[in-house]
Image (cartoon, rainbow, N blue to C red):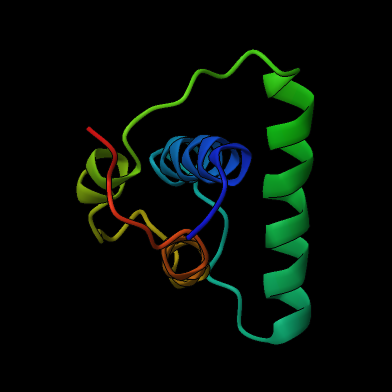
Amino acid sequence: MAGRDEIILATAELLLLREICSKAEPFPVPSDIIEFLHLDSLVLYHLVATTDGGFRPTNLGLTVAQLTPSELMPHGCLFRAADIMRATARTDEP
C-alpha cells in the first residue's frame, strides 16, 4: 500500500499526463527507452514546477478511470500511467 503523499503525487502526475496528451500536438510516441525516459523526466519536471505543494488529494481510482486510450495519447504515457497504478495499488479509503 502506498502512503498518502505517493497517492497525491501519482494523482497529480496522472492529471498532468492527461493534460499533456490531450493537446493538439502531443508528445510523439517514444520509440526507445531514452525517448521514454526523456518524456518521463519532462512530465516529472512539469509536475514539480506546477504543483508547488498546492495539490489536494483526489480519488486515484476515479482519475485512472477517466484516463482512456486514444489517438492523442502516446503509448509512453499509458505505460507511465500503468506504472503509477501498480506503484500506488491500494484499497480506497472511505
